[in-house]
Image 1 (cartoon, rainbow, N blue to C red):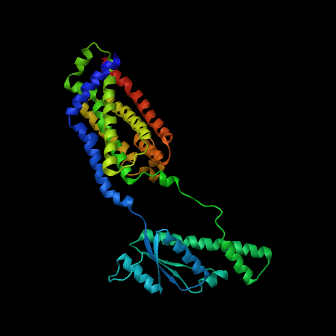
Image 2: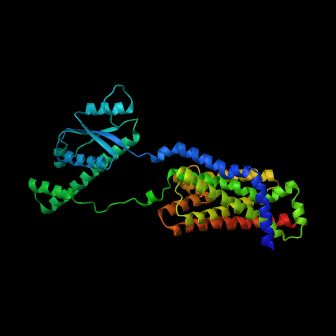
Image 3: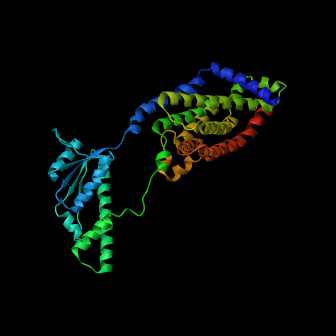
Length: 402
């Protein structure tokens, strides 16, 4: 009887909300419109790939320079950079300056340049050390940082080879130049004892389009769910709550009916947005079952949080203001607009206190794994709903038991 009455109340509320166009604005048009705008603005950044042009001045022509050029060739083979050999440091600097737009004129440009000085190989093999100059560009700071990292990495590798050769020679007490060169070549050709393969970070990172679509969906979910949660206050404002209380029905069915309304609006809104962003924007939400679990859990958590606000507000206007503030704060901390957790520290900790962060984390985990990967996020979202719903329940019962 309680459930049947609750469904009748929910049906009445849903019919009213369908006639109220605001539910379409908050539940569909606004999140979809913002997702399209953000995708238009940030989409090109997501599709962009790094590529730089590096000029190289090889005044050494020795084995160390050859080894460095081999390493640069590997960057070119991977499509990361284009390597151009030039005659002098002055020409390299001019190309870099043209690339930065500091001087006019045509000609070739470069993002940064490497200068391998004369006698570099000879100085290194004698143990006197050497320098590789990197000419950076103010207009291509990322490419310049990459160039500097490449030079530092090569220098560290040469240093490791030098230490290995010195250690071996001191142990064997030999000073034969041929043996030294052979040993250095052997050490340099030895593979690294430890190699790193970054797979997790790449696979768990949502594409920009999906991230924006998910962020906008969960942000406006809180506004959509509030239409049902605030139903008791709306009934009181319209004077229809007294009629419901006077009716021969279990008063728990009134609360349950409002909850069913919120749940139906939230799930319907999220489902339509998921389909729309997938078809229109190419968003990649992941396995349907995993997404469905996350949607149900995040709708449940939003009902609990907004239920506390609605249950403690004195009027519908006050509840709407508080719900807007709570929704904005949680969305900001949860990384709906940008990933606040990457700042680390307190913000990273606070982000875990929001359903938004757990919803987005669940989608990221789903992208990297199978459906069970979303269970921790689903459990966290359900915990949000249970705790906040438990807090809201006594206040809601008091509102209908008076």
